[in-house]
Length: 355
Picture 1 (tube, helix red, strand yellow):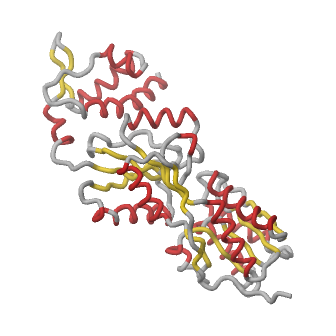
Picture 2 (cartoon, one colour):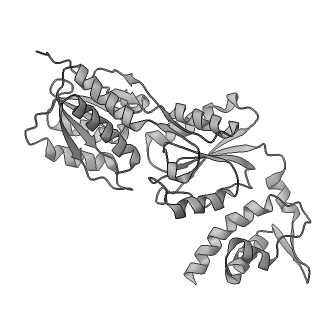
Picture 3 (tube, helix red, strand yellow):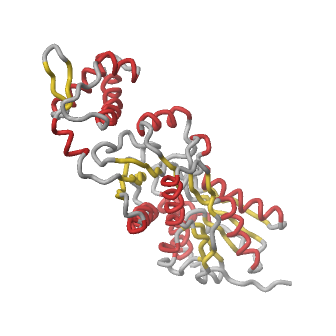
């Protein structure tokens, strides 16, 4: 019975998507048609249709079937075509920056309404979307998880029901969806080069986020640069898992780590949100930045300029990712674009004397 209820929850948004193709007074699909199309049981169909009847979107006419009610007009008439920017509901500066950047693009795309939508980060993808209610004609999606598996891709494709979609923030090639993302390996190499050019030959890279393709590619970029230039490198993994408060766990890990003697002079952070854990640990261990330890991170300068001291940053350029994703969506381009980025110096890297 629990399984049937879950399946009815999944069927509901899919029938919503179907309703957008009907006008008031038209006969809706029969129970058997729905069972065949969506491969669900009659019990699941009955429960979902009962919900739509209770909400007065469908009316039953004895012996004739179900018909679409006048109530559907309020969801389909008068709303402009909408592009939905779908992001996980994280307590994060990045999420705020994404949604703000998306809204700021509205004047450049006056023919469409740009609308943000957040979903529970405990799931890699949203369970439902307000496609009919908001007259959605395009979707920008930032998954909460890493590389999407086949079942997740299939579920999302059913959910969007043919509405064009572009991923951003993740270059999930296995999804076969177009995407716009940061070239994470390049970003890691750029951060390492910045330290190297300032005379640092003993480096560390701080893995202060859950292991996913983006963070591991950033670490790999640092590792590759260090290997090519014969630099010493230590990888410090704070063991962060999805859903954990990364700054707090990073602080605990680094506060204990820094009580031991370390010999690297520069450290690369893979994310600006959790870097605050390192900075606070350094402060409470009386380790001066950049006097004793130089720091550069990959992230948003909107955040890192507020740190004390401000941190040299390889910019993730979330506004650029979103703008590129929106252009891909509107143009119908099915490519996968990885954006190069720039380093912004803010005074957290000390120049060492070189022999």
